[in-house]
Image (cartoon, rainbow, N blue to C red; front, side, top):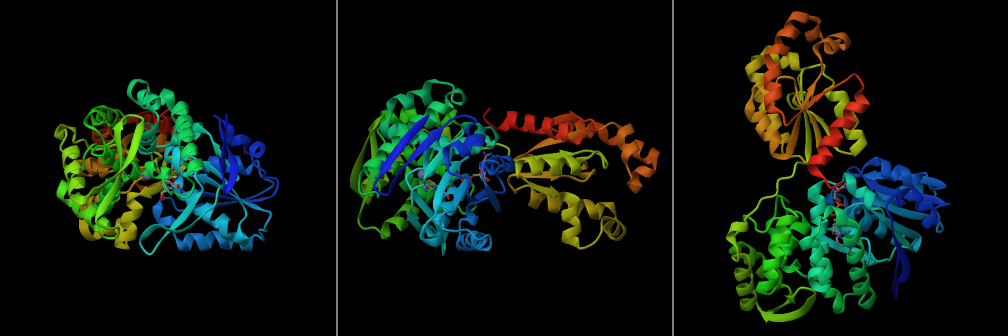
Length: 512
Ligand SMILES: NC(=O)c1ccc[n+]([C@@H]2O[C@H](COP(=O)([O-])OP(=O)(O)OC[C@H]3O[C@@H](n4cnc5c(N)ncnc54)[C@H](O)[C@@H]3O)[C@@H](O)[C@H]2O)c1
Ligand SMILES: [Zn+2]
């Protein structure tokens, strides 16, 4: 499907089609030198697939996360273009979420005063929101999006198949923006959120959201009026985000909560169950007073009154100017509406591998990391790094007890990391606290490899003593079984083992 977007700054097409990734060359002019920008969290296959369509591809993978949207990475990308002799007639393609899109769009807008830019958004948020509208930016000196340009892409390619690998929580994060657009502008789309199977309706949701955003940006490219309705839920969302030091909540999650007070009671009654259906939080641990304080802080910069987007009935939004006192009343009423809706988000972000030494955790873990772009962490390696001693040295100096204590400290630090494959030392399961911490943010796999196979392939000193190994195996087997979320009986085929684990993980945690 082609959705044309026409603005004063430039016109372009949005191509929305499953499987379109491998056809990028049909839609974009890629028979030239192409800087493909992606990040370490985006499955590397996507950039590689696009590269196959380019005459001279140069793939650059930046660190995933908002922190990469900065001046240093901006310089780094321009550096790549200079070093690789890019010219005015070459181009930049973003393959990733809003971070990659915003950053590489800005790079394209400045290199030689502007080269062609194409966007291939791969997150829900970027597919329905950030990839269109022509805003590009980086964060600077602690301010979000403060340096940037209006620089429309030459084309946007949306392949919903890429969402298959997106963690469920990220999916809901983007859907919150789509839900926002439906509440202000499309009651039929809102009804889809209410009544239909969301996963089965993804293509329709993307298309309808795109049409809303297209209409809004065509009417009001530079945010003089109408475009403000895209800010529905955002005033309070920004307050939550500024209270949210630990970045516990994603932007869309904050928008979900932020919409609740800014609408009529009847709208709120319909909005709450949809947020719940999307597994979005409907409240935070911050008190209403804390949030109002953050709003007040924001408001100081902008004057006595506050303009909010208010939804009086689903599908219709208006701008309302009010005093801060009126705004406070609205927020209190909206957030106290249903205290029972205090929900926490807990979708797993990490894959945790447990099992006997020699069961192949490292090999499989590294394969998973390579395939998904997740970070690979080995707890034993972290211990060695931290103590600056080998494991036998630690055992010798502090005994097994001392080692286990360090192990637990290291696991406590690792457990809060997101998007990681964590391979644990063979004895990590002995302490239930370790597993409980890892489970907070991860799904625990028991890599169950037959003792015979371990013995056959092992060159580890421990396994040289077969009876010792057998003893450990029988002692720990039950623990491995009872403390994991999923037991995987594995073969000697590392690649297919990796696939089995990933399939299970995505089944549990993503939309497919
Ligand atoms: N330009 C605009 O108009 C506009 C509008 C809204 C938001 N934004 C910006 O967008 C950014 C947020 O975008 P986002 O939510 O897409 O975040 P993001 O780009 O950080 O992506 C979220 C995470 O998903 C991973 N990922 C991306 N695609 C994946 C896939 N297909 N499978 C698995 N993992 C995948 C990424 O590596 C990242 O870790 C913010 O910087 C925000 O300021 C811009
Ligand atoms: Zn937003």
